[in-house]
Length: 239
Image (tube, rainbow, N blue to C red; front, side):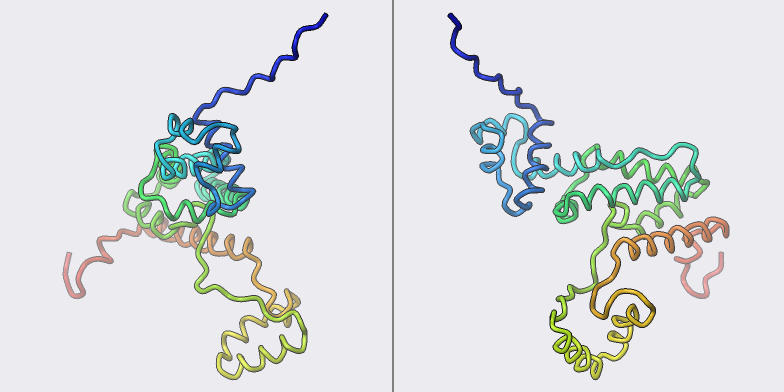
């Protein structure tokens, strides 16, 4: 005679499991729909059980950012400073593209956790290992801005053009009369063999283009021995 079937033992709840479940749930339902209650339901616990591992929703979001930063590939061994930084940032971009809500959360954080600081410190260390002064490294990090996390903000949101070809052509004709330079640039892709007019930009290409422009500029300034004190000196002042 066999005994009653044993109920599968649930994995113990810990901070890492809570955070990874929150990331997975946000990937499914979106960050705005994520709540402590919905996360508790996903984990099969009461909401109060979560507060043993995260104090509140803000701490949960901080931890979710930590999980994503943990997905960024480690620094490449043996690479020069420019390749190492480029690879690290592009890995950060890949991590954020895997979690479309992540940039919104990164921008909303009010303080940096140790994991976030570790990542920033590694980038600074790559500049310093490349011979950059602390001064130039400081300004390079400011210039990178959110790009160090793999994303940038668009200047303005652009609605998609009408699907109907005739309506789309009429819309571009009307806009071209008032904004000729914007429309010239927007439609350049079709004339150059690229995307169709109004089809949008290649975000990855644009991101890498801007990143390379910045890195090339940093390299030029480093070779010139650039120092911000000369730039800050009032006009006409002598050293």
